[in-house]
Each structure stands twice: as C-alpha cells, then as structure tokens.
Image 1 (cartoon, rainbow, N blue to C red):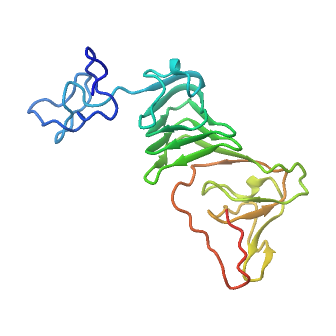
Image 2: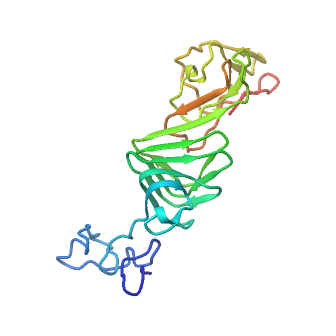
Length: 239
C-alpha cells in the first residue's frame, strides 16, 4: 500500500486512493495538494509519488527513473532529457513534459493502456510501434512524429502510403504525382488530388518520391473505417 514502513506515501495502484471519508476543514494533504471533497484518500497523501525520468538513456535504465523502471501497470512522467524505449515496454499513463523527448526505435514497441499526454516530442521511428489499449487516450500540446521508409530510393518509383494522423497532406510524401484507386472503374485516379489535399484516414495513396517520409501530427487512436467499394471487382487500396 505504501512506499515503505517508514515512508507513508502511497504506491501507484494502492487501495487507499479514494477510500477515505471527508473531514470538515481538511482541504489539502501533507504536501498541499487539494483533497477530494467527496472521496479523499486514506492517510496524509492524496496522490501517489510520481515516477519521473530525468536524463538520457534507454527505458530500462533504472537510475534515470525516480522510482525505478515502471511496472506494466504503473505510470511515468518524462520530466527532462531523452528516453529511448526498449523492446516490449508497457505502461498505464505516460506524460512527456515540454522539452523532453521519447523515441520508439526500429523493432521496438511501447504499449500505453491509459493516457498518453505529450507536451514534448514523441517519435515512432521506421519499424517501431505505438500500441494503445481500447480505452487509451492521446493528446497534449507537443509534437508527434512517425517516420517511415518504403525501401525505395528512386523518386521514379511509386510507393503506397497511408497517414497515421489526420493532418498530413499529400505534399508531405515528397512526390509530385498522387493517386488513389477507384474501385468502381478499377483504375488509378488523381481526380481532386493536389499537394495540399489532406490524407484521408484509412485511405491508401500511391505517390512518387524517394520513400522516406516523416508524418507530423497527433496520431489517430480511434477506430478507422475506410470507405470500401464493392460495385466493381472489389479491389480497394486502404491503409
């Protein structure tokens, strides 16, 4: 329940949270934090001690966490510096402070089951993965980046793309020709497409370009249902 027998600060997930009864005249806890007026926590502290990262290194560097590497059901705050996620890291809630950086590199995943609040910089590199639980949320005032490399190096080669956010435009793909696949006519079409066209979530696009793209914008995390046609032969390009 508590940090130790001599340190009565409650641990994350402790059953003392919200289990108390309000006491008239007691409006703040030992640290000056506001008490709940309906269901305060039992004891002198209203909330858990935060697990804060400061410094530069990999996720499993316990010395950079104030309470050690977070457990899968724990929470974390990236207070300052840069942290690189190592394979299979899982956390409940994570907050990235302004000026701090989180990187999810190739062949690595970060699973967030609660809230991801990014006020710094959060980058998922090519081959990296951000996985969110069914009730997970994403937000904040910071920058979200997703870098992707198709493997093609010629700008004469067409690459297939879809956007992980709802703000990137076709010009972001670096090419000069953009197409979607028209299911009705079963042919490629560029009708209505310009460099300023925002990429529709769930729709696939074919574009010229060197194949190295950085998508910047808050990641989509809700269900995406692409418009799929069946009047032709049923072929659709989705992503």
